[in-house]
Image 1 (cartoon, rainbow, N blue to C red):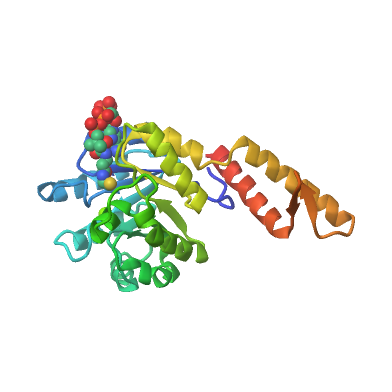
Image 2: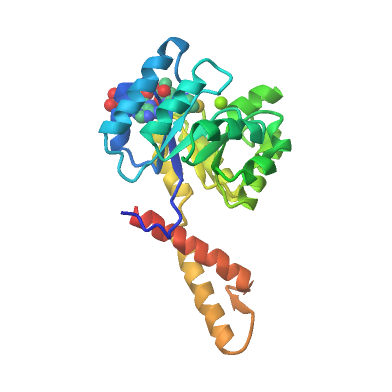
Length: 284
Ligand code: COA
Ligand code: MG
């Protein structure tokens, strides 16, 4: 059982189409930190009802172990959204992911139908950046997924390896989420056979502050797990920073120096966070 005082890792968050029984079974053996059981865009309209029941059955009968179980519902303005909410209020996954959230009212509406599960929001509309802070502040929100595909579609942006056209919206959602202590996960990398491109995009997301990446294929898990985990060098440096700062404090100083760089209390807080993340991954 994971230590509840440690932060739960969300390095690799794998989507599974809710109508795909084989993939739903396979997911219980994959090394991802979380699974999004998708009832929304990966499920065709004629499959919606079957997928809703199939995912409910799988969640009731399959042991997904340490993996966080998140169900992505259909939006409430579709014909399936309300039944999704009512079904999963009973089935009780770890969280419900609400698609195309643009305003806090979209979260309120789901919160009313699902009284006591954590909610996540897909941040993926052009307007959402203006409301991100209020959505992040919603007491039922636990995490954000920045939906870069829908965002690009809404904006009319082109795909670019540096994601420059999306960075403003991505950053605003990230800032809002982090300001409220929420988990914030990056969008998917569509070219699931391009490991190099995936790694570059994971590096970019990690450097921005994302907790992990949403994935579409099992082959993407290992790279996300590696990139979003603290490296051995980071762990080692964090330990030395903590030790050096403690030493400086004992000598009556508020500042230490490690590898020619200043270490203040705030660096110690960041270093402790790195160690807690490493420990949580280890404990998983
Ligand atoms: N989750 C779990 N297992 C998956 C999976 C996923 N997202 N994607 C593929 N697999 C499994 C397949 O079932 C297959 O298992 P098997 O070898 O035991 O039969 C294995 O991984 C290899 O699959 P592969 O043949 O390489 O992929 P594919 O061509 O069948 O499917 C996609 C490719 C992209 C269509 C598929 O990965 C997919 O549907 N991904 C999720 C898409 C999604 O959810 N989108 C919504 C959010 S953007
Ligand atoms: Mg979407």
